[in-house]
Length: 147
Image (cartoon, rainbow, N blue to C red; front, side):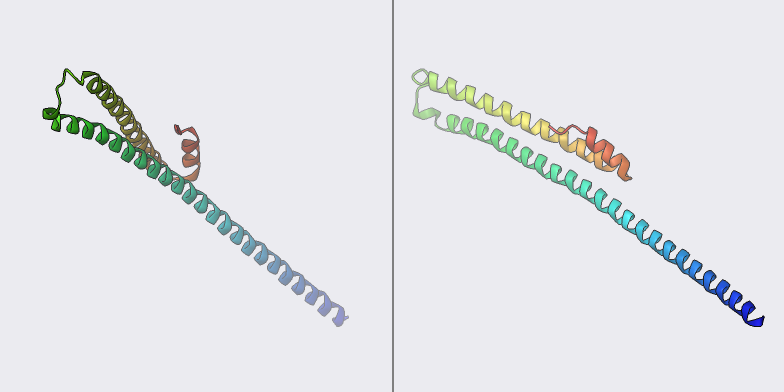
């Protein structure tokens, strides 16, 4: 009879240990899963931040292009003024008028590029500073003006 009692106690101990091992295994798997999800969320957040930074670089390039276009117009005006002693305005008035229209057009295009890039840069800065968590960052990114 004693053997049966020992067998039951051993079986109970083995069952208890195996249950504890299962709980430990489930707990460690849950922690590993939570860690992987947290790492995935961090990676996703960093990916959105990299995307916003890439947009910022694009807008800065647009700003640089706008300033360059405005500089071309101003350079043309400087050349026109510097060489004004070499020609008579009445003889070349058509060329000067066309050059003036071209300069105004270049100034308008450059100004538009500068204005739109500065507006978008400000929007990207607000977007990045506004959101701390991923859900806010994703929703703001999706509703952000991407022209």
